[in-house]
Image 1: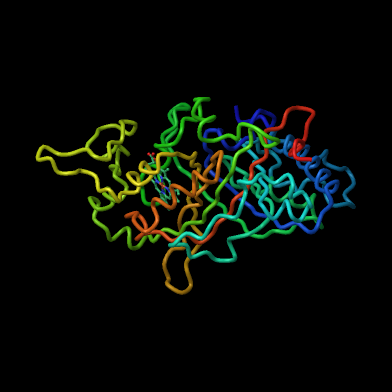
Image 2: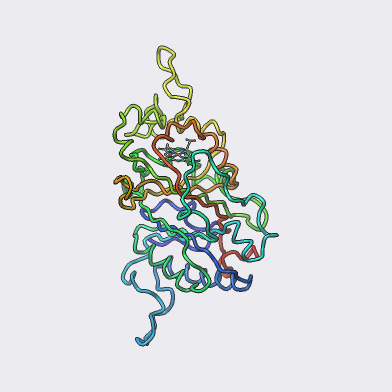
Length: 361
Ligand code: HEM
């Protein structure tokens, strides 16, 4: 029950029911040959299978005069639904000399008008997303994957995060973000193949069954938000805080009607609400975000907290279209600042006997 299969049509951690914790890391690689990259991906495949089974990455050695092959902090723990998701960025293809295999769509994201990106949370060649229900299980997985690739990769940036949700015998409610609104309601259904084909997974080429992941480290100005009236908070999203229902409706999954009117014919939802603008883009993405809390901003004394926004889409254009629609108009902009960014091609799923990225080479 606590194990997710590493092998499958898609990589794990995309359509997997969301877990409670994430450790997301972006790595830089040294100049590597194709064969060195293949070796590293084969080793990561092997390690990932063990990690997701809740096993040490290698048999624990008996020789105490040597460093242990597994760092050991998960001894006695199970897999805790660990998923590992690997992606590669545009610069990866250049460094490895594989630019002719780079899908045209894989390009650095454009600068968006409200971006205030910090170099400390941008760039890099490879991302690894570790999600599970235990933060130490995630940390252990990333630590051991990096340890075995030592000399080939260095750490560029990372972000850990958390999600909380009510779980009534496997019936999981949509998690709330730090603005206390349910986050994920409008997603394509992870159980409907037609929606996954339409919005999430690449349908042809060597990257078939892969997807693009956009990562944005978005600071949320909690102090400002907390001084805002509940009615205005709800107007910001176009949804009610408690139930997550669209304004004017009752239940979370009732259809969102951006033009809904009251008895006097007055609009109930502002055109610049976050969800109304997302709807106007006429596309969708699979959001799988986690909250973060990183202590206190030394300059302002405020929380350094927000959302590690993660979305999966079959084309980066979907994200770009939505983000442009929100542009300067989104009511939410007053309360958030984008600080970090990355785009990666998540490799196709791996079948037993194959290794990560095999179709790329
Ligand atoms: C919907 C919060 C950033 C795209 C929502 C909802 C909330 C929310 C509460 C309504 C419930 C739901 O459907 O999940 C936030 C917060 C953000 C953020 C707190 C930043 C800290 C973004 C960004 C994008 C985005 C950067 C993409 C460019 C969407 C989409 C929907 C949505 C596509 C669903 C709209 C629909 O129902 O069709 N967001 N969001 N959000 N958000 Fe965001």
